[in-house]
Image 1 (cartoon, rainbow, N blue to C red):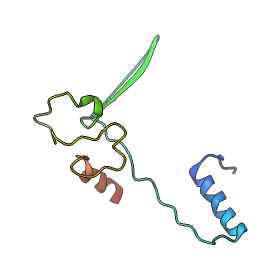
Image 2: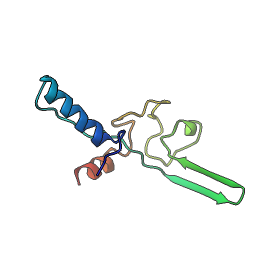
Image 3: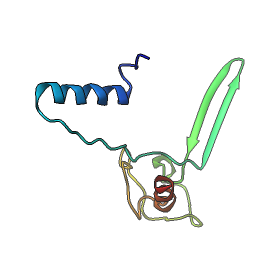
Image 4: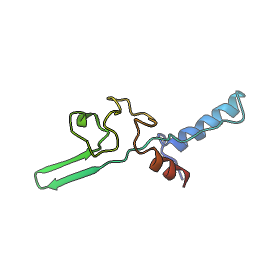
Length: 103
């Protein structure tokens, strides 16, 4: 079976072969990217003349002006492009993310 050339597993396999063949190393360690999204709402529209989707989360930048008095945290929110591997108090879902990764 031929692997897709842009598949991460295929790239890792080629990298390992290059390391061994070039004599640079005989072992390399790779780890998964521990980043994924949890949404509060996902809306999908698919009709004859329209297809669209909308995802939303309280932590999203576009919700900065909304009143979340009953929410998880009214003071700490990730900035635009600032949610890469956040921790508390920015990431309100750190507990569920940890549980999912450890399972």
